[in-house]
Amino acid sequence: MTEWINSIKAQFVLNFIEGDRWKLLVSGLGVTLKITLIAMVLGIVIGVILATIRSTYDLTKDDGRGGFGRVLLKIFNVIAKIYLTIIRGTPVVIQLLIIYFVIFASSDNGVLIAALAFGMNSGAYVAEIIRAGIMSIDRGQMEAGRSLGFNYIETMRYIIIPQAFKNVLPSLANEFIALLKETSVAGYAAIQDLTRAGNIIRSKTFSAFMPLVAVALIYLAMVMILTYFVGRLERRLRNSER
Image (cartoon, rainbow, N blue to C red; front, side, top):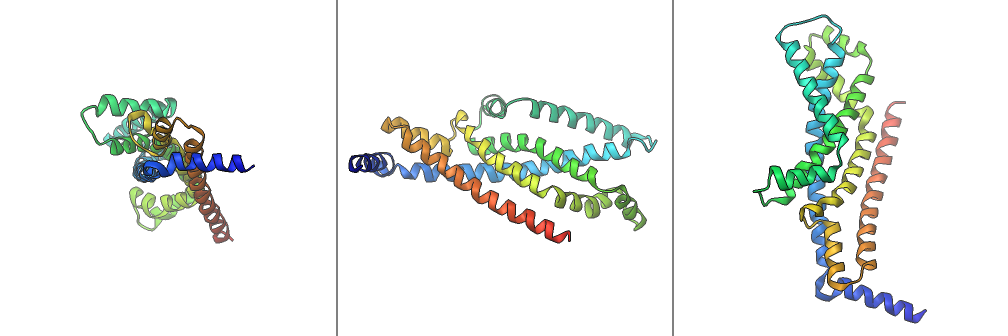
C-alpha cells in the first residue's frame, strides 16, 4: 500500500510539479473557456437569426401574400436550410480543420478561428432549438401583438421570442454543456486547449494516466457545475409557471 501511494505521489510530482507543468493545464483551461464563451455568444446570434428566418417562413407561408419581401424571405429560408443541413450533417472537427487550414490559413489567431468554427456549429443546433420554441407559442400571441399595434418584427421581438427563450432555456443550457465538451477537439488545429495541454504533459513525461485523468476530471467538474446551475434554472422556471 505504501509503495502504491509513493508511486502515485511520484507520478503526480513528475506530471504536474516538475517544470511547473500544472501551468499548462491552467493555461489550457483558460483557452478552452475563452473558446467556449465566444462560441456560445456567436451560436446564440446565429441561432436567433436562423430561427427567426425559418419560423417566419413557416408561420407566413400560407397567408397568400406575395411581393419582393416574400421572395426574399424564401431565398433566406433556403439558404438557412442549406446551412443547417451542411453544419449538422458533418463532424465538427472537419469543420474546424476546413476553417483553420483552408478558409483562414493565413491567420495565426487560432483561438478566434476555433471559436468561429464552434460558434457556427453550435448556431445550427441553437437555431433548431429556438425555432421549436417559437413554433410552440400559441398563434394567438401573434394576433394579440398585432392587435396592440405592433408590426410582425416588433411582435416577434417583444412577445414571441422572449416567451420562446423561456421555454427553451434548459435545452439551450444543455447545448452549451455539449459545446464545452466539443471544444476538446480544438487541439487538432494546433490550439493549446485543455486537452492538448494534457497531451503535451504526456509527451514530456511519457506517462499517460495522470495528465489525461486530470483533464477528464477538470471537464467533469465544469460539466457538473453547469449541470447544477441548469437544474436550478429549470426548477426556477417551473416555479414561475405555477
